[in-house]
Length: 392
Ligand code: CMC
Image (cartoon, rainbow, N blue to C red; front, side):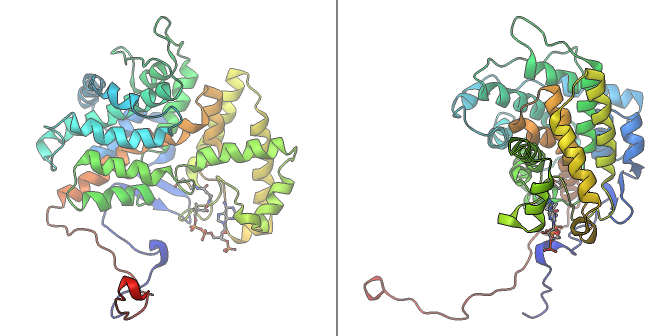
């Protein structure tokens, strides 16, 4: 096949040059624009990390205020979008709704739904980042047959999301700072992760010069799968199943090790991290902290801890260098907050939006870059001839 190099599933292909996120999988290092994830988790909010990822530097107080102001200004979606929500059956998965509605939101913003424009990019980014959160909350309310709740100007990014999810028309949801802080951390830890499946998808779509909304909508679709963002939902389903089987995880791990019907320990393993996922360490600590603060004891957390301990000492997992990833404990936090399982991947999508926006921008700004166009190793027949229908 000439000069084409076969690299199954792009395991060893550097598909682009990027200045956004650095990962060292052997050492378990993750940095946004050079800043270690541990420092950001300790000191930054999600919105400040989003600014850092999208614009390349931490915002000054003036920049932070301006950007937060834009997020508040553009948080409402067009009222006519309600008709779109009404068209979905209540059984629709919120990720399907989210992806469709991001594209629809772009249609309601024709002046922004255009080719990349450096001058208007901050406004475009603020629209998308802010509205995806409104759309996500509306998708959830729709799935429960509940009236949608408008965002409020007085709330910060994550507070507003919780408000739109859980308030009632006549009674505001009581915001607990520990809950807000935990969810904000989940958003921050998901904010970017170099060339994962969904970000690579966003870059692929962006490389055809599709607009930001179309590119981000494609990212949501790629994220949905259980091997990627859908893993956080799959982890909780797996833990529930183990509990329903009255197993402490031992029988389940046996199935995994024997690859029984392709069983996998969801929330374990990573294409890049081969020693540990630094996000998992941070999130596990937060999980313990939040649950004890809320006075919750979740039997699924006990199963998760037992699974982790057993797996980390088992030759199957040791030989394959499989460790818990970010999704292993995030679902337990979300359950404690009251976020339903089918919304977990949507939370991931809200969090990943800064990464998608920044990667879109990188592709768009490299004005002379070529459209992404991988090749293949063709395995079909070399030549066949057309046979008329009556002769087949
Ligand atoms: N449970 C059991 N075995 C596993 C697991 C797992 N979670 N992950 C990988 N393996 C095995 C795999 O079967 C293979 O075994 P063998 O050598 O006998 O064929 C070996 O480990 C190497 O795995 P791989 O499939 O080549 O690894 P990959 O880099 O293609 O896949 C992964 C990475 C994350 C898709 C995979 O580890 C997985 O499916 N994990 C479970 C799903 C999950 O938690 N996904 C979230 C990833 S982190 C958040 C995100 O990026 O979205």
